Each structure stands twice: as structure tokens, then as C-alpha cells.
Image 1: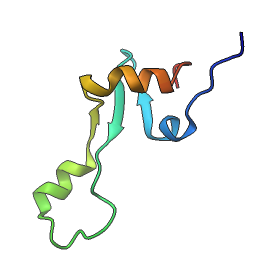
Image 2 (image 1 turned 180 degrees about the horizontal axis):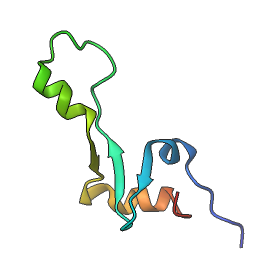
Image 3 (image 1 turned 180 degrees about the vertical axis):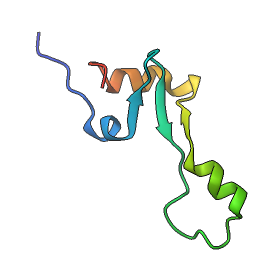
Length: 66
């Protein structure tokens, strides 16, 4: 049986926390920041967990822990 391959795009964006949860950064923080208020931009700086709906799919993309 061949080895499973890690999805490199997902590996660069998603890390596993020490408890095994999937951590990611928030979207919409790269450009057009003038119309977004300070509070929103500050919230976008923080990381968050991958949603329960996407967890199964992301786990399949990252078979070796990443």
C-alpha cells in the first residue's frame, strides 16, 4: 500500500495544537483594509479553530500530524 500524501497547501495554513485540535488563521486580512474598522482587523489577527463541519476533510488532508 502506498503512503498517503500530505496536502502541502493545507499543511502551510493549518497547524495542530498540543491537544490535537486544528488551528488556522482568519481570512480577509490581506488587502482593502481601509474600509474595515479597527476592531474587525484586530479580531482577524487572532487564530481560531477549524469548524466541526470541515474537521473530517482537513484531517484527511493532514494524515501525519502536521
